Structure formats: structure tokens, C-alpha cells
Amino acid sequence: MLDPGRGKTKTGQLWAYARDDRPWLGADPPGVVYVYAPDRKAERPMTHLDGFVGILQVDGYSGYRPLAAKNTISLAFCWSHVRRRFYELAAAGPAPIATEALRRIAELYKIEDKVRGRTQDDRRTIRQEKSRPITDDLAPWLAQQLGLISQKTKLAEAIRYALSRWDGLTTFIDDGRIEIDSNTVERSIRPIALNRKNALFAGSDAGAEHWATIASLVETAKLNDVEPLGYLADVLTRIVNGHPNSRIDELLPWAYRTDKMLR
Image 1 (cartoon, rainbow, N blue to C red):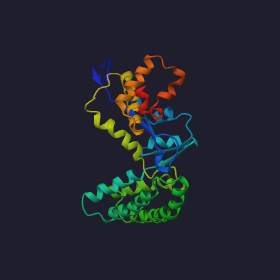
Image 2 (cartoon, one colour):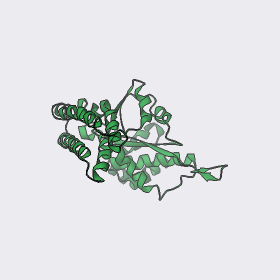
Image 3 (cartoon, helix red, strand yellow):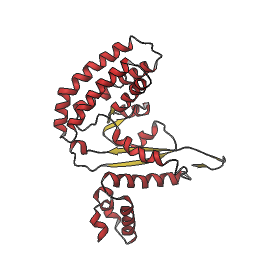
Image 4 (cartoon, rainbow, N blue to C red):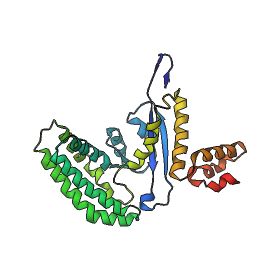
């Protein structure tokens, strides 16, 4: 964005918060909200999620930890981020410890393939039976390998990353609503990331906030299988024609149906 008075530009952030309960047959519709902030400081999610009570699945960013200290939010961490660190080591050349870690993590994902689309109770039962033995063996094995290698290596860093987040990484086993990773929000970030060079400047803080709102509507429409351009055009037409603000919920993407555009 432009940075008035300094003759320069500044970089802002779009924070993404997503929900998708379809993998466990939840009734709530999927959605994603982008919230603009001028930086990535820890107080941003504290403000964004003020009043929220529940489970937040996140990457390893340490700025989320103050949320858990409030005792109203539980943090579930992402196995995809753990896996990525070991994958980068294995892809660079022979790395037997990283390769073995990847094999064990792959076993967890095989179980997830089988439980996706089942009820939360079924998912919890299967995970407790099949996933827990894997994680119960993996933690001490990682700790053992850590004691055998130099603490200054990338491998040691990857192991410490996993072990320091272990409670949050294994939360999914006892709660069928939680996914094994945060790929739901990662997929929601991808369209924004791919487009940022085409839409390099938001112009101002206000412009970035408007951008975040439109992006939220477009990506949520896509998650709900609603065609975004037709949706936005029809919603704007209805608002101009006097659709009451008291019934604005009827125009949200998950409440929308294609037949509304035909009336």
C-alpha cells in the first residue's frame, strides 16, 4: 500500500480464518474470512478472535500461543507443516531419519483418507484405535533421534518443531471435528497468494479492507459451489433494489442458490 508522507510503500497482511466441517459431516456451511491488518503481530489474532470460544487450528507461528493462555481457545497444530520440514531434508539427499519420519507421518494420512466423510464419533474412534499407537511411538522415537544428532542441524530443528507442539499435534485424535492439518485455510490462502503480483497495490489501508471483504465473499461463494461473478452481480442488484438490511443473511454465500438469480 501507499505510505503517505514518506514517499514509499508498505506491506500489509491479510489474515485468513476458515471453517469447513464437511469432512466430518457437520451441518454448518464452509466459509473463509480475510481480515486486513498492517502487520503480523500477535495482537492481531487476539483482536480478530476476541470473544471466540473453541478450537483454532494453526501453523507453527508463535503469535497464536497467547490465545491459548486465555483458556477459551484450544490450539490444534498442523501435521502438514511438520511433514514439510522433513520432506525438504529428504528431498535434498540421503536423510534416513527424515525419511523414516515421513513414512510414519504418511501412515497417519492413510488413516485420514479412510475417516474423511464419516461422523465425528466414527473419526474419533478410528483415530484412537489406529492413529494413537503411531503418535505414541513417534514422539519417543523423535526424542531418541534428537539425542543422536548435532543440535545445530536442520534435522534437529525439524524434530524440535514437532516435539514442542506435540499436545496440539495430537489433539485431532480425540476430537473428530479436527482435521490432521490446516490445509483448509492453506487452500483459502492460495488464490490470494497467486494473485498478489497481479494486484500488487491495495492503494490504502481502507482499500485493503475492502479487498479483504470482496475476497471473503468470492472465496466463500466458491467453497459453497456458488459462481462468484453471478453471485456478486445479483446480490448488488438486490441491495440497490431495496433488499432490507434486516434480511442480509439471505444474501450470504451459503444461503444463496442459483435459482435466486433467475427471479
